[in-house]
Length: 167
Image 1: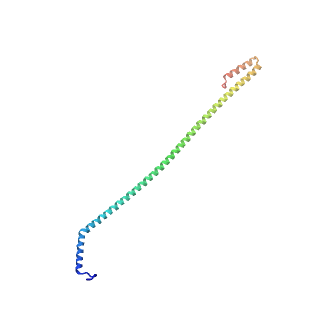
Image 2: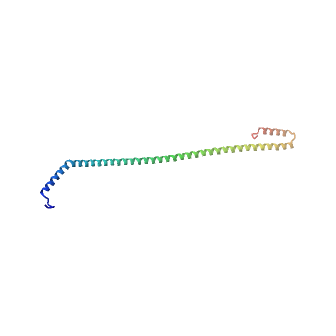
Image 3: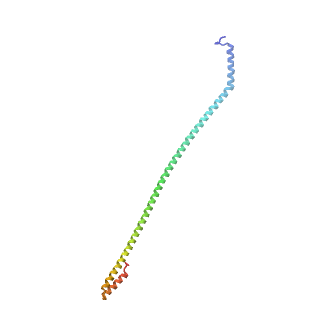
């Protein structure tokens, strides 16, 4: 018997053993292997679906996050604009109050100046009247004669001095 050409009995037993092993594998082994491969395939598909759902969920979360960021930026811009308007209103109000206060101060100062001017004019009139009376008195004492004209002049001057609005 040679190594390259097997004997008929050897081939027969090899085919018979191969058939029995194949039959046992086909009956018991292949269904278990097929079931295991099928379960693995279903698990992989289930994992792929879960990964796709997770990806979609992440995309939705990213969209929501971007939307929230956009809303926050818009809110921030609106708040900044509102603060600027409030600042402008406060500045305008302060300016108006300052102008009103300065107008009050100016009008009060003008009234005080006018009152002081009037008092000075009254004092001046009073001083002029007193000085005129003193001068007239001195003149009258020197030249006083008991003539009826001078007495009537003195009476008239006394009446005018007593009824004068200057005193």
